[in-house]
Length: 376
Length: 138
Image 1: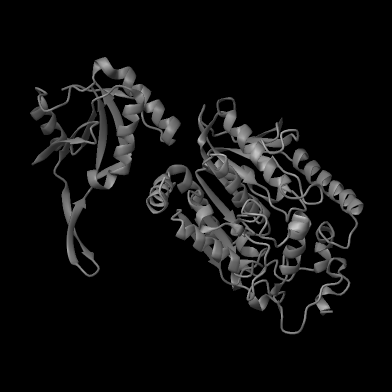
Image 2: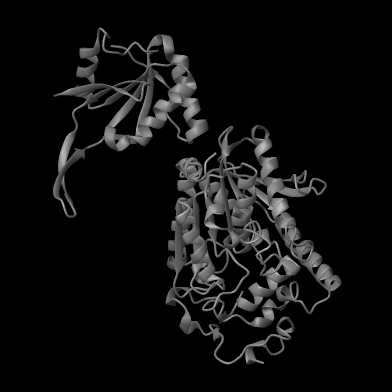
């Protein structure tokens, strides 16, 4: 057993043969301005790791997960907010109609009287924790003068795939159907989120597309795009490393893990190019050392081939949880480096609101070409 | 100064004074002359009075030239159609050589309510805060 994994309950049974992984916990790998958070004590991460570890019994996960969620929520609701935050229970989506979903509506003070933009914000946390305190939801709503819609989706230790996607679908549908009451414009919705928030945002967009919804754009950070490892990536170890991503997604997908039986509504890179035709404008921000960086690039190329409006920003010397994301993820000490990334990220969100970057003609052209090739 | 008067997208007419120009460098081509000093623009709602047979057309052209302003004159008073004119203006701002942030709405006395409706429509649909519509006549 590699030294790093000794004593870490989550890593029981993991084999790492010589030369197969690179240990990036040494800050020498990092961009000099973003090295903070680099050398994390794995012990700090154990409470999270046990929630998706295959070697921890389900009852133990439920007890620990519920306690952790309760503490996150207590912190959120006891904090003084700059926006009005209201909690709703909304009906389940078509695919799980009997399961209601909790949705928060975040309203800053600088909104218009009606027809406001919407930031559909998916909180991240490895599908093991949903900690709204760790993300700048209110600041983003204020900066973009938009209403925040925050779905409180089910986590992997509560219910496996497609539960979380169903919850996002339900939240989006409810928001769309109640636009006037919520004071929003339901054709001006930008989906955003970090890490699992990005993963679920992208995956849910495939579900929404299937139901005829067309978000204005998707702007995400460090989204997981695939559960199938590729030779050449996933070879780093650190905070949210390949083992953690593997186990986290395994816990969510169960027997469907790494299977082509499930499509892009599970993980975006399960999409074919054809699946991506008509996909919303997409802006992806990634770290060089995100575990599935190659699949990320592959997903980006599929969007390119499908002629979606797409941008891909990858930061060298960055991993999933270092200083570059301090502003975007609302963690750590912001500096010029992290502010620079945030400015770019926020400007992409603003562009999605300001301009309609969708390309509906691509779908029409594709249909026409298909008809020409194969007939009616 | 030459002032162009032309139809746009079947939505109405534009009064467009000749723009200033400047020369820019273009890779592989060399020099190219482009429009310079973008102007403010006015969406002038009159219910279609501004057309080739408008009796004060020369006066309106002279006004636009003197004030270095582009008048975009939609035919319709329906707010969705007026919205198309606003969309046209912001999509074609480069060709029109106008400043997107300096678009205002004016109307003759009969069409002030339609003009104000456009101002509110622009806020709803484009999130752009225009000044309240003003009355304008020659």
